[in-house]
Length: 219
Image (cartoon, rainbow, N blue to C red; front, side, top):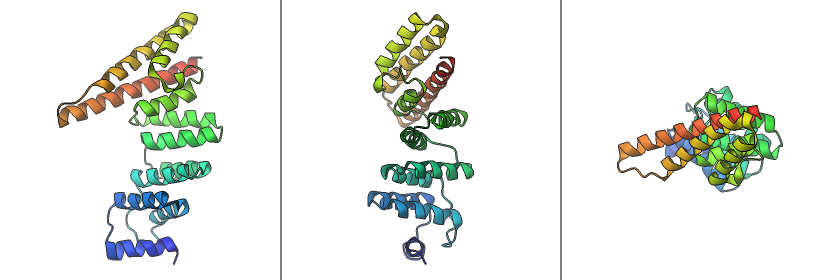
């Protein structure tokens, strides 16, 4: 019996871990203790069920495993775990998207990064400011403004003036980014308004990403 199998036996028969999120916490614990191989082994044990585990990995487990591989600078492992997640028909999150993009950037694989962004758009992945900025460095390498939202907007206005054929797409993105900033600055006053505000932010950042993809393909 492997080390991880023994851990599984202990957790399921003594500690009684019963949820997928708790296994994700185990993966995170291995990662924090600089044991990335064990973290990935947990994921494989969950996928195979060989240790008698009925719980299969979900988004939280795959995310934890990908972040463990990313922290270990094992870029190919990140891509491999993402492929396993896709095989399990689990849609990407902003966290897994960032892991994949960072790994592909290290592997100098821009084409696969663009494909990952297209998948995120297709599956309506929740997008936030940080995720958009990372995507922008790939889609708009000369215009992303180093992660500064105001610089991106300034670059969009300059592009609109210098390239009439790109003016409409550039100004459209600039306006959406302004609205993203406005919504990010707002503060919710209740739990309900907090949920609605978060949904509005994700919708706007996703729209900005769609527009950045559109502009990228026109350039």
